[in-house]
Amino acid sequence: MEFKTPQSLKLEHEELHSQLAEATKVKGPIGEAAKAVAKIMHPHFLKEEEYALPPLGLLPFLAQGNVSPDMRDVLGMTDRLKAELHEMLEEHKAIVSALKKLSDVAKKENKMKYAQFAEKLMLHAQTEEEVSYPTAILIGEHVKLKTNLL
Image 1 (cartoon, rainbow, N blue to C red):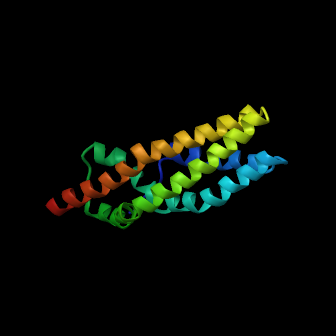
Image 2: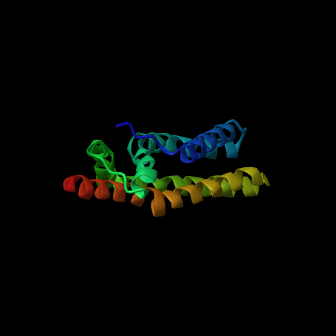
Image 3: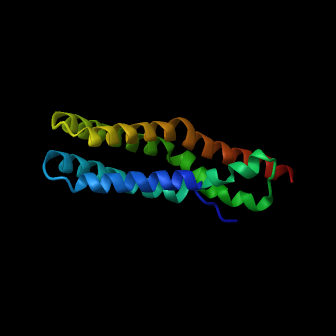
């Protein structure tokens, strides 16, 4: 079974990537701060796209009570997320720290567009910590329980 990141999350990630890429092209301290964010964030985004977010694509099926044995294929992703959750959260701390620097620099230069972007991305990280990651892990646990009954 193929697992796809929900389109809304995928588009949000693409938008954040695009905005960060734009910020890295700004000359001076903003561009340098944005490059520091990108350096930390890129490998983290790859992990999310590989195994943290695709399990969320099962939510509509599971919410309707549809569970099938082929859904067990998601367990590799959810078990990996569960095992690497501490690392993912530590990466968020580093990303948020770099984003705070970007926000501070942008405010100092009165470039509120970049400060707002940094704050938006910090909120995105918080949403992942509070909603996306726990939900993906719970999807795995739910699939384990339900498919063992089939």
